[in-house]
Each structure stands twice: as structure tokens, then as C-alpha cells.
Image 1 (spheres, one colour):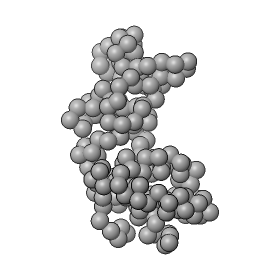
Image 2 (cartoon, rainbow, N blue to C red):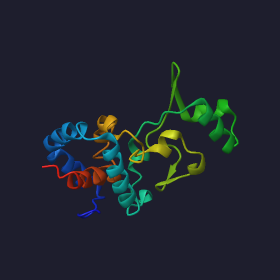
Image 3 (cartoon, one colour):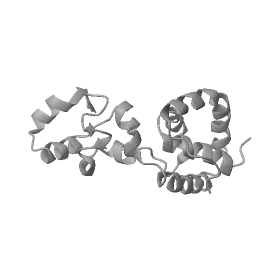
Image 4 (tube, rainbow, N blue to C red):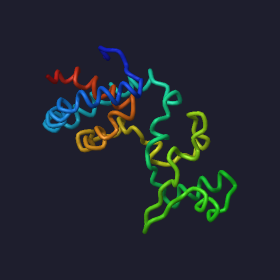
Length: 168
């Protein structure tokens, strides 16, 4: 059960993240010692509770600030959905380096008024974010805390986890 107000203001998240940096470093060390399965269960409960109370289309900060990796299959699928040749899709939307492909624009080209225009065909990284539902939370602490000030879901799950785990 969530015992505090859910914070969704992005300016507040930035301020609070800076204020809590030292405590969060200690919290990371604390979480590394917790039982992985129990921690995953606690995170999942918090995530389900918090996600139900946050409308991501009001925020859209992930789509406005993250670099998105793209696979060949994903590029094929979205190009097809948009009725573009793969060459045209790539030229318009992708930056390539070696075997990596990323979207060439931040915010994401497909974000319109905080709504994903290709939502049903969005990239795996977009479907997965903020990844609070995935197993092995304690192996993703670096990434979680990297996005702590960016995503209200992550911020609130972490803060709820401090309560649930009786972190001091």
C-alpha cells in the first residue's frame, strides 16, 4: 500500500532527486543485499499501484528525453505500418553506427501532444519502459536511478520501496 502522495511534477522530481542523492546511494547498497525475488514482488506491487494512478500521456518525458534503440525487425514493422519503404524510413528516422540503430530525434518523432502515434507498433524499449514490471530489479539499479528524476513512475516506486523495506 502506498503511504504518501504521488509526485508527478517533473521540476519537483529533479529537485527531490538532487536532495536525495546521498540517501539514494545508500539505498542502492541496501537493495543489493535484499532477496531478489522478494524485492521483485515488492516492486511489482508498488508498480501496479502507482502506474494505475499516473497518466503517462500527461508527462511523456520518456519520449521527450530518451534515446531509443531500434532493431531491424522494429524498423521494418513501423516502416510497413507507415507505408514507407525501409530506405525512406531509415533516412527520415534513424541514425546508424556499426550494428546499432537509434531514433535520430529527441523528442521522438512519433510523439504528438504526448501521444505516441505508432503506439501499437512502438519499439521494444518503449514498451518496456520504465521496466518496473521486469524481474531482477536489483540488477537494474543503475538504470533505475539514472531515470529516477525523469519518470514519475520510477520515482514513486523507489520512494514507496523505501517505505515498504523500512529503509532508514
